[in-house]
Image (cartoon, rainbow, N blue to C red; front, side):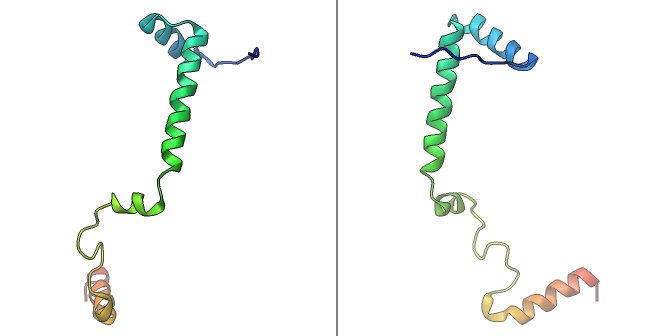
Length: 86
């Protein structure tokens, strides 16, 4: 076991005091709990592949495309008409 010195700003000090009052934990217990929660969150984040994130976006059929890729020219023309109003 090692001893650490931690400096907390006023906001973090208030949050720590609230946590201690609410849970009844010691300062060390509260900080340890916070470290373990953050550690678990980091482990979960690194396990997500880019495709997992993409799959949750749900862009629908065709995503944001205004025309299929086989009709790119028509899609550009429509986008320019909308933008320029001609």
